[in-house]
View 1 (tube, one colour):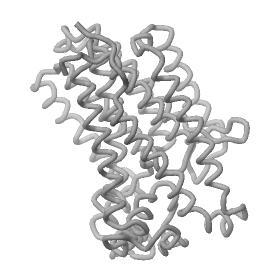
View 2 (cartoon, rainbow, N blue to C red; view 1 turned 90 degrees about the vertical axis):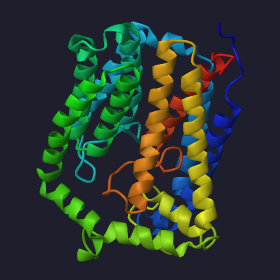
View 3 (cartoon, rainbow, N blue to C red; view 1 turned 180 degrees about the vertical axis):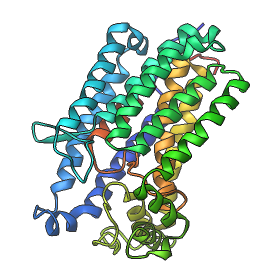
View 4 (cartoon, rainbow, N blue to C red; view 1 turned 60 degrees about the horizontal axis):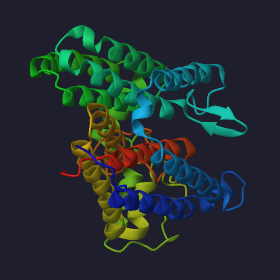
Length: 366
């Protein structure tokens, strides 16, 4: 028997701390960039981030108050999938930005449909698995999930955005495995997917160069290895206590996109090992509490939904931080809650709002 509990306070606090850190660090990382590169006031990106943060916290608060079980209603699922898929198609009719069709302009504001698609796929997967968990060893049980995930990821790959597509596939794979997929089928899927991933990595000269630069960035320090080298310099010069807020040097046109994909490097340089570790601890708390909510959820849909949303944050944070530290090839995946950007922040906070609602219905014995 389950009873309604209060929302998970530690999860909410860790999320709020990361959002507050985002506001401070986005300003520190972007003030000079806004003036010199974009001819805007130094508060340009700060104002945008504060606006998105306020909207995101309001969205989180709203999601906390909507019973998560309403999300498995067909009208909700198909509306979310329909809107996100249609938006993923429309982006190809919009002029590319930096050679990619990832953004859709709405009233002068750029949004990434792939971010919304992640949550839509998670909700759909959780709902299908809840109904078909007892037949998960049958291929037909997973056909709808494979079809939807394949369609969404295929559109994201065409943008191109391989990092986000891989993240969506990984989240779905973890959810299916947690639902009880037999080990022999997991092994079989692995044997199929590994060659496909290798083929994707080596099929493009651009991706091959990224892989080579990851293995030996100093082979081309002013070219493909530039991002990794500058990021590692920023992390290394931070020391224990950092150079102080606004005191970082690498963000001054050495680090590419210091306020977005490489903001963790700015955090490490300006706040040192202590600040970088504090951010890691916040993500650790989110993953810990998310898994605890997963274990305590009162029904299968809640279990799988909580797991998917937790993995969404965990995988993105792991990939982003690994790229900054030079542990993975460069990928354009933002740091959840922290990187500058409205779409990522809104969707991440929406996910946490749903997760907090699941926690309200958790088992009292967990």
